[in-house]
Amino acid sequence: MATRSAHINVMIRAADKAARTLRRDYGEVANLQVSRKGPADFVTAADLKAEKTLREELSRARPDYALLMEESGASANHATAERCWIVDPLDGTTNFLHGLPHFAISIALEERGELIAGVVFDPIKNELYYAEKGQGAYLNDRRIRVSSRERLDDSVIATGIPFLGHGDRPTFLAELDAVSGAVAGVRRWGTASLDLAYVAAGRFDGFWERGLSSWDVSAGIVLVREAGGQVSEIGGKAFRRDSASILATNETLHRSLNRLLPVPAPKSA
Ligand code: IPD
Image (cartoon, rainbow, N blue to C red; front, side, top):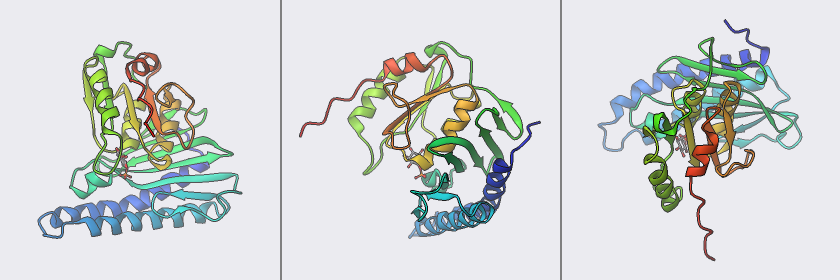
């Protein structure tokens, strides 16, 4: 059983509280699928409600920390505070909207530019992932490790697919062509924080995606690193908060998966 630090306890308490309202709202979404207008406005409200709960809980526990949140952006002290919570109140919004039970609350803690703690909570499966720098990664208080698969042809790799108005389809299709021909399977489950948590737990052997935001990936990055995995940009450069792509794998597959992913042609002016 893991010993949870004060920071991790604050993050888990906040996630737990927001999860209670998200679970209730998810139950309502099922009823709204058949209405003509659909549940879109309701889901936007659920997302905002969860974000408000998280903002209140995290600010009450640590009033001098900054916040960077998907819906409301950066807090006023964002440029000056030493520590910052990076929060996605509802990662996997499209799944939630369609009644697909795969979404998460994602909370990371950054200290002087370095990610030091992460919590990803899947409130439907009741799976709580957390990790802190130097302390390992845990799923429901059990230690997790990345997979030990060394061969691409045994591996299951997760990704994200560009969608209406988002992403570069030709680049993605070239990547999918290269990867799908070399691995046991490619999955697109629609919640980047859980894709990373699944890499940390050894369920997926790797994950790549372009165009994600820091709130989608920050907590998951801590999980993968603390579970013994590797995280970089596609191409191998060190991952930064504003990186345009992410590649996360177990310890051994990083180089081979990276080699497979084609470098996109520069855009002509
Ligand atoms: C989305 C999910 C999804 C990814 C999308 C993200 P959101 O986050 O993480 O897996 O493919 O690009 O926007 O919008 O549901 O918080």
